[in-house]
Length: 168
Image (tube, rainbow, N blue to C red; front, side, top):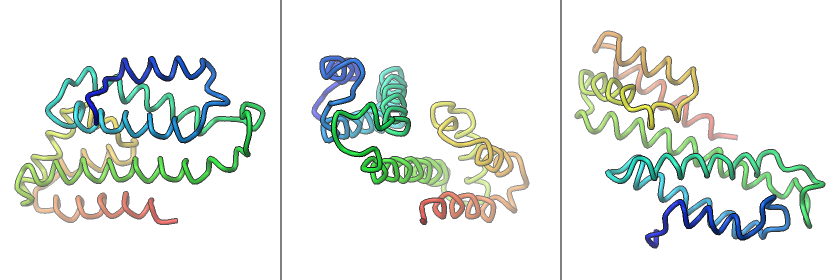
């Protein structure tokens, strides 16, 4: 990351055109990468949480554009050409979830009790916890609130379940 902030990225998106159609796809992908780097450093790292949340909101809006673009909105090309990008976004999201789980587990030592403690901390951090779907949140709560004896096996099951979603 070159020190850019969300404000700079939003300004660039605005300068590219309000509706985004006709904007080179490669430039939008580059901006998405910049936003992802901000999310990792600011929201999930020790940075400015407000900046990280803003980056996440802008990235989600950009993703909405990618996932819901109609053929008539494209200046050139075919909407089907966005499919590899969509799959990349899905895989990146799954990888972020795996990383968040591993960070929570490793931060508490990886023992049964440590995993349980890590999941409790994950639940207490809405910026991280809200990255998961309702089913995964329920599994995280089960690990956090259940018996320590089952924490490792439940964690492995959740971890593997998220990884398997990336297999096509």
